[in-house]
Length: 584
Picture 1 (cartoon, rainbow, N blue to C red):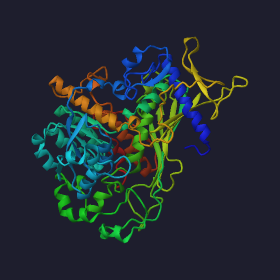
Picture 2 (picture 1 turned 30 degrees about the horizontal axis):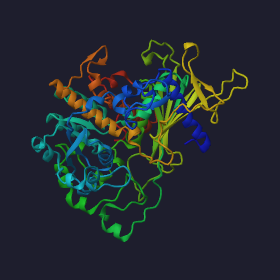
Picture 3 (picture 1 turned 120 degrees about the vertical axis):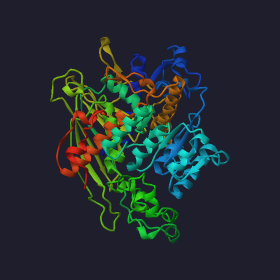
């Protein structure tokens, strides 16, 4: 992603990361990697399998996600009967990557006829379709519901236990609450809700009904991010002062549909000027089924908040302020979440930025949401008072920048983590690279993009990177990233499958306890944290606060200081009260 990285330098960076992970594992400083001989099942190594073999081979093997995230005892459980609500783009990804041994999809629900067809037949890339996941004969038995009321009416008949919600952002909170009232556990896609007040309402509803609330920030369940975090916790990079996150796309090429393509769409709602995944064609089948009157009926009793003025607003919901949160909600929230994880789940201090509708306009995929954003967050470093570690240095600040533009994707997306001793690059949720800085206090020391490294803990001190002239192959026979030429989509590191598996595991554990879900805390920590999803409501609310407050800062062209009360789910304080919505 760097403008001047050669393929050889990227290969060195990947090898360095594997070497460092191997060195930390052999030094007993890694939970995600273990050393020893070949496990009984090399595709799904169990920590006990690997350790039984001893250390003779010196190989490094990644621990399976189920072992690392604490749900390897699933064997013997019946899959949780689950419904998908929202069968569009994200719903298709989740269904393509879910594990039927954990979540048995017994029903799907969507008000758009074309989405219902698509969720079964599948699409390109990770959206495999339920016909392929289950086989057509089994998939035919999955219930099809055209409204939430229809689905909840069939709850008992289906034996429904949980739902996965992947609907437009403005509908997350009413659907979540209705499902919780029906006694169902909820995994809701990110962003959590359209405003922070609604986020807090969802958290309170989960506590009041005793149901699980998980939110789909999948990096919390990525083995790749877990391995990177372990390295950062071992201070490999030194003092981190800057994280550069970006997610760029190019939606600027003219759309030229064939006559056949045009015949499938309702042209009264406009034909896209550019090829654009947010500003889509409106299928005739959806337009016929969903008149403005019908959409008003389906607006959960509040069309102003939860309704859509027409089918075009429904299909293109990401382009409107009422229904979506723009680039910060859809893309930036993921990377702010990653930055917060890297920095120890600290809360940000302030945000400022520039955003606007710089590229699109009348007749050219016009929208309300920004098509370009550049924001700067200030986070507390470990010595800052706000880091919660007893520090007193208010100058210890980490600068996190996020950029996203719709007219150029040369750099793609990922996170650069820049420390005083080295740089780590997490690319497209698929690969991770590591490079060492040159130690200028040592004559002849090497560093930079071309230097290979080992990690040592000389004298029992903290691990440190050192240059090496002999390549040690620390990754052993189990490389951390995907193999050369492999598919860009790797379920083992993406986190979608893992988050759904752990969600199912938590459901079963609470059922075994024969009690409602408890979010009780002691000394600030969840008493039952091991059976609460890693990205539960309060964690996800922090991500929403960062994304939505950034929108407000850009709209007002001002620096906004975050307030502690915003992050307290039990307080009514929210950023909207003082800084207002992004636009009127």
